[in-house]
Image 1 (cartoon, helix red, strand yellow):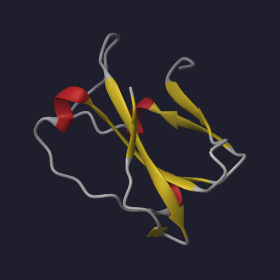
Image 2 (image 1 turned 120 degrees about the vertical axis):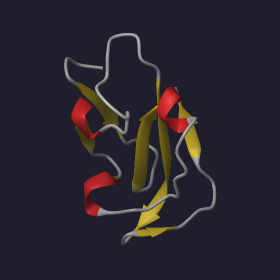
Image 3 (image 1 turned 45 degrees about the vertical axis):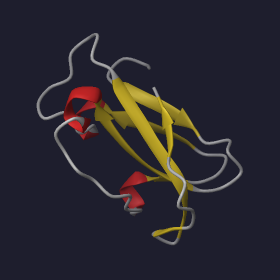
Image 4 (image 1 turned 60 degrees about the vertical axis):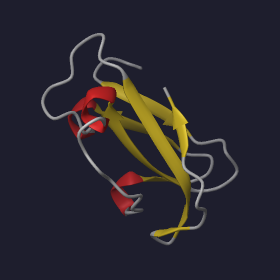
Length: 87
C-alpha cells in the first residue's frame, strides 16, 4: 500500500477484474463478480486503487483489514468461476 492507494501489479498472465472491501463490510453485504472498465486490470498493467473506491460502508482507517477479490475477465465478462482472495 502506498499512501492513500492500494497498488496491484497484474502479472497473472490474464486480464483480471476485482472487488475490494473491508472484512467488516463483507460480513453484511452480498455481491457478485462484475467486470467493468473501472475494475479491470490488463495483464502486465499496474493500477493504483484509491481508498475511496473501496467498499467500506464508510471511511477506511489505519488497521482496517481489506480483502482483494479477483477473477479472470475478458470483454466485461467473467471467464472463470474461480474467485481468488488476497488479504
